[in-house]
Length: 250
Ligand code: DC
Image 1 (cartoon, rainbow, N blue to C red):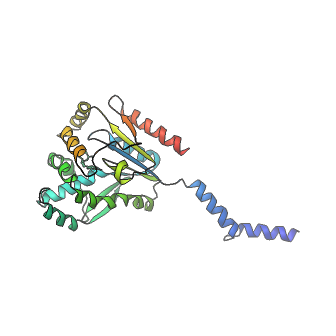
Image 2 (cartoon, rainbow, N blue to C red):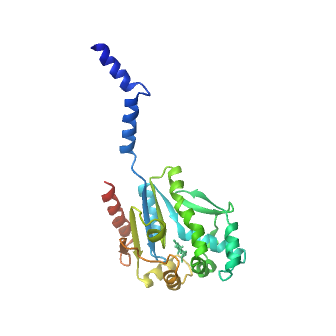
Image 3 (cartoon, protein in one colour):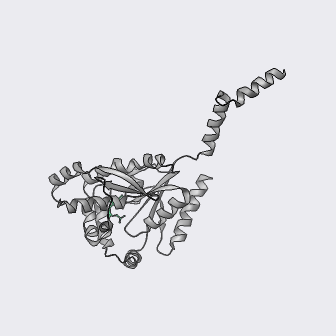
């Protein structure tokens, strides 16, 4: 009997015993939380970036600001002198743009031809043009697979999930995201936020263009959780979202 017991113990605890492997796998499944995707959409200066960054830090997520991708492409096309009205030249230029990703802290940076975006993507020139380029289906198509590919980037770098912000994340990019939020705020309050950041940005005009375009317009997707941040502090918005995420995670 004692021999049998010794044999079973050895079987269970020797390094590659099937039982131990099975137990290890079960433990890994219960202790490794599944990958989560959080989509945050909303108009210009609605607070998407600030909330996304805090949520990324809190839940160990990759932060993906898709507005910065559209801005970088716009800046590059303007630099090449390719106008949004010249579809043939634009389509050709898009085929020449090679996208890769570099991490800056927790944030995914789009590299075009190995080059990161510079501060000019937040300048007045890009502010004025970005909605016109973002309305072109070929531009959106070029970014579609790249944006979805950020899941693999997040997984490769050991993040627990990703939080992606933009205009069409909950409606087109990740319609089955675990959490879909839509942030809005009074336009006057949003204009004040931009002015406090020292930026010249006609947010009302950008919102008009982004909401009225045919390709993936800015919409609050059905089933998304809408949050009006007009009278809320950044902390209050974050706490609202985090409470919902934690409730579902626990
Ligand atoms: O988030 P932002 O203001 O930096 O975005 C700049 C522009 O990019 C915005 O006016 C519209 C476009 N955009 C888009 O069309 N789709 C996205 N998912 C993100 C941004």
